Image (cartoon, rainbow, N blue to C red; front, side, top):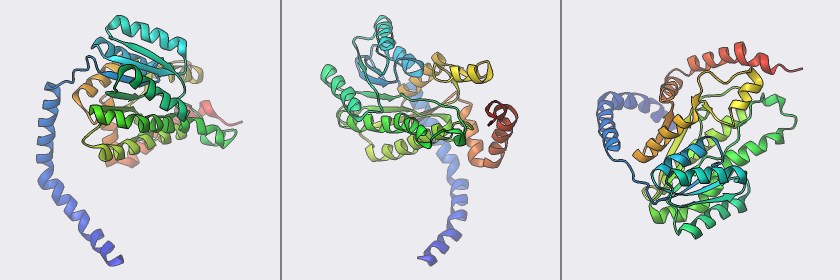
Length: 309
C-alpha cells in the first residue's frame, strides 16, 4: 500500500501538469461551445410546477416573480403565511397560471414531506425545486452563549434543504426535473463572523455536487453561489452593526433575474455577481493572498464592532 502511495505521489503531479498543458486549451474550447449552446437554448418554464422554499421575501420572493412572468405554476413555502399571500397575489398578477401557498418550517421533517405531498397533490407533478430557505447570523464563534445555539443554522440551512430534496427526488425523476440550491459565496470563501453559516453553505455545496453525480442524468442540479445581496436577511444585520448597508451588496431583484437566466440556460453553477467567480479562482490559486486580505478587512473594519467585554 505504501509503495503504491509513493508511486502516486511521484507520478500524479507531473501527469497533471502535462494533462493541463496538452488538454486544457481543448477543454476551454469545448466549454465555450457548450456555453454558446446554453445561451441559444433557454428552457420554457410556462406551465411547469416550481416549488420555492423561503419564498416570503428576499431571493425566494423575487425568483418566484421571474418564474411567474413566464407563466410557471408556483408552490410557495415559508413560515410567514401573511407574507406568502402577498407574494402569491403578486405572482398571479405577473402571469402565473396557478399559485398555492404552504406555510411551514423546513427544519421540521414532517413539514418538508407536507410541502412535496401538497404540491404534487394539487398540480400532479413537480418540475423544479428551488431550495432557498435559510437563516444568517453574524457572531464570533466563541461568543455563542451555548454552542447548541448554533444548531438552528444547520437545521434550517443544511438539513432543511436535504430533507425536502429527499422527498422531492421521486417526483423530479419522473419529470426529468431540476433542483436549484441557493448556497452562498461563503461556501468557498471563509466569511468572518459567520463560521457556522459558512459551514452550512459549504455542506450544501459538497452535498449537491455529490448528489449531482448520483442523480445524473435524470435530475439536473444548479448550485447558486451569491455574494452579498440586499435582502431582509442581511440588510438589518448591516444596519444594526455598522449603521448602513454593505457597499458591495447587490439588489435582490437583479440577483434573482441572473439566477433565473442561469437556471433557464441549465448552468451547473451560478456565481452572482459574476465577479465572484474570479475571487473563487484566486482562492484556489493563491489561497494565502485571499486569507490575508480577509484577515486585514476583518481586523481593521469588522472586529471593532464585535469586541468582547
